[in-house]
Image 1 (cartoon, rainbow, N blue to C red):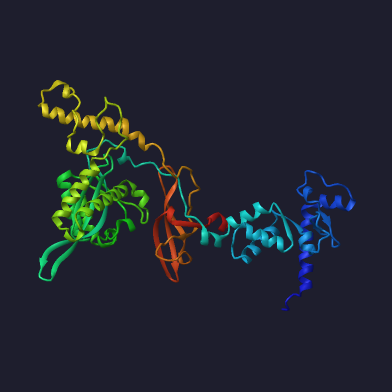
Image 2 (cartoon, rainbow, N blue to C red; image 1 turned 180 degrees about the vertical axis):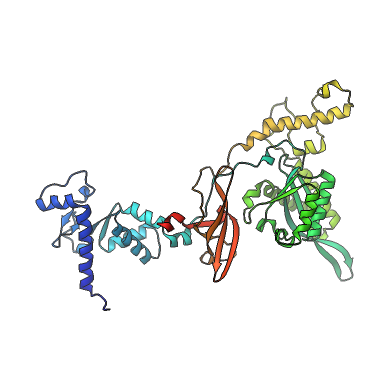
Length: 470
């Protein structure tokens, strides 16, 4: 098949443009042919259109006497919402290598076309461009979800906890002739979901046995927990891998069996969803800052297991002594609401007068003080702290939820963006409010298919299932 000549391409272009103009600008062309004035309600009224020798609508204006060509002085008029305009925008958008609206509009104008409503039409096409979404598209976002019930319940400390692992640190085991023998230590932080208290346990290795021992020490000191939440990805560092916290791994059964004996359940957040564990991630950051200050006094080269254990106890005490609400300047309210108030039932100020408990049953004075402090804590917790959780700090607006069949780009910080894998959403997990914040993405590499569970903040929507069906 012979390639069309330049003359044939020009004739074909003129024929297509003329057909589109006759279809949408019938009244305007009729007015120009009759020599009458175009209606002021027409979209071409300010353009002062003219008809050229081939009967094509072109832009009028005041620079027709310049030495520039007719494509520059009198561009062809194309309706911006017509399919022809979309094809032209896509062509020149690819010609400028998927740059923004300004580049694309300049290329269209230089080619001799004037799109009516060009800015809106070009922006719409670029917004739907799959390549642009792959190169610069933002990850999905959804309105901040409601807090889980365990954050809002009056419950004994460490009944509902979040757990995370941080570290490691090199500690000195023993002195040798050539120097010293070192070993690594990690720390497991258990954060109470309701009272916001923390408990830190040291572990010697990232193994299932070490983690179970840390859980046993927590339950022995703080009492059994009813529910544990944790991350299952990058923010759980090596615990998710070394502890093999997957229900398909046999070693996970050891942890599951121990928890079932304690009547405790474990809930995992999706991988790469550190914001879903912000309640304890924030505590990890505070603990690291406190340790940095401590290590300025004691050099890390002199760190021993005993000293690190002491540091962790002091870190826990400092975090648990923090105020949960802004400190009041009212002299009649000297009591500060802190997690330590409930954990230790001790306060530096005078406790409130003991109330009447159990309908006047005779109790020891010390027990009255303890009960009074506990009641004071929960009363202030309900009155001063609980309402501070009402407002959303960010992610205020509801966004359209992802659906099954949507084509997405899976974010992977380990590789460059051009190498991020594409996948199809195979399953969605709506929340109690019906909004989707977690999805299951299936990717394919040849004959190998892999499924990933990710939060919506880790995927970029490339094409909706509605667009595919259309």
